[in-house]
Length: 366
Image (cartoon, rainbow, N blue to C red):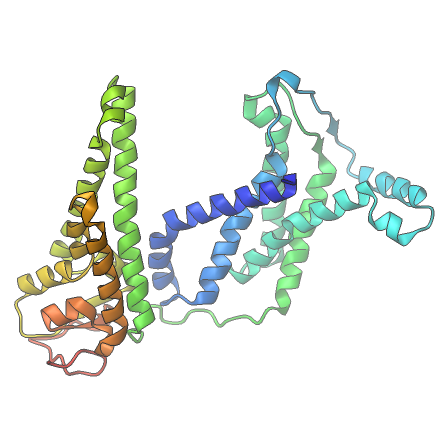
């Protein structure tokens, strides 16, 4: 596999992994920053995350073998690239194609292109202009160059790539150009009144359910890894290998987390992320919290505790819950059917007294 393709695959893989880890907090932050989350925002932020890792993979990898390391030099001449371009022009013999494909010219162009998305994302996502792009481009490029110069901050005895001030100039130029290019992108109006209630759509309900499953899964994974590491470093390596005690701890911890969240707040982690709550109906609060738990992530979590042979049951539960979320009136889904409630935007004023579940956007009495 070509090195550039391999490094790109690493960046995509790391970006995808981090996107999964950060998805729930990202959704929660976006709903509080802008009041909602669009598909375009999701795609752009995902691309920015992959790009963040691409900067490091393409500038620092592959790492050299310490036994064959050859120390690299330092270029402190900020105009050395001019001499390189002159030499390229001489080698090309007046041919524009030969000049454009010369190694020195390509290296210069790639340094500019590598940081071009940085300025683009700074303007489109963070609404920051040229000055911010310039400072970001210079700052990140400087960190990259210093990492190379110090041999990854002392891991290697010397620099394994040339510290080049020309790279600082070209990288910063790329970031500024990216900011200028982003000017042609239609600018969305700044978020107004992020605390204003929004319609409860089925897509929003599904997004909340995805956040629930992700949060439950990640809590289980993190706790399992922590317990496994604790067993290994405490001298219980055989116990860690021969039993699934770490997995059991993780599963119980995830179940405890989602149970406590619903029973204390009446909302799941996904509800909190997308700012939803179930309201209405004639049932007492204690009962509706229980139905919210059983009809949502709690039901899945309980089924997930069953032996491995029962895995299809939890999968069937997820499928059923998803179908009901998009086919029932107002997207009330299984929790709404069990609790005789409907989902509302949590930014709505809390109801006084017992609410009527026949209000617009809520479920009607069956």
